[in-house]
Image: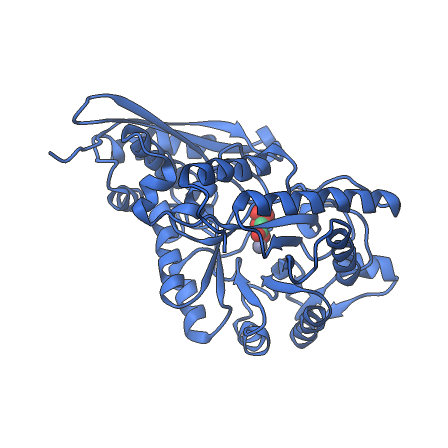
Length: 433
Ligand code: PGA
Ligand code: ZN
């Protein structure tokens, strides 16, 4: 007899995220049709700051409370419309659950119910189903294919929209290239993080952190950030380029000045006392130079989310040398990813479940990427919660990589700690490569 997991309750509430802004938390209760036990799954929804314009709509109340950022309407959509749509449905078929969520919303970009409402219900359903079957979430979602821990891309220096410093590119990340396990890789990165703090202190730089837990000192430009990181890697006893590689998320859509038709670097301008603009060609040349000087292996959102031609040129020039990750470009959306694959724009996708609004759609993006030789990176948002679901997702889909901030701030560390527990369960034979 096949076990069914009819949904018995669906509810949501407004909670706070890591920036002190409201976000939605959902709970789904299911019944195991064999044992009649009830199980509850809970999930909370993250939120971005450098949000792509093609992301599904995050529904905010726009009222006075919380400066307009309240999510009471999204909560109400879960408690009424989504509850009606999901009650009695079998939680063990995530695809059908997500299809019902999509039908209930009825729009392309989830502007009706809000992607936050949709995602909360989608993720809480998966959690409830796993709980009812007494399986860890990664195993429920990935079955026997869950074999591989992701390599962490750890954001140790924050800039752009995630900090108030003069660093214009948003994220500078390190990845352990030689570690024999996730735990070892995590240790390598955390040690470098601490040495980076020491170096900042020695040089009289701020050791305050940005939204994702990385340090946020005032530095003149990307080159000085990369030099400082290389110094921290060496101080920790590792060889840059061999033991540890560097990744950048430029979040270039945030720098793009539509009117001027080029990229403006406000921090670099301030530090140099002159306006710094770069056009698409300059940007590509800039990255090429940085990649020649430093052990870069990955560049995310190097160009604007609408600059398909630029992305094609970037990929033609640097695609063999670098992983070129589309975040705002693809927004975890199979249609935009398919366009990128066809045009030869990028060679990897950043997967953020709240950019699209259901687990099934995010998994479809991962499948499409893999079928076409694109790499996948599962990602947090700059506004996070204690929910570590992306750790389970990264393992479930064998993503290969995860980026979830610095080893600082519990909203980030919770994901790393969850991966440590998963590695313990999966056993020591798993390499992270
Ligand atoms: P966001 O930043 O969550 O603010 O969009 C993360 C990223 O750009 O990767
Ligand atoms: Zn990004």
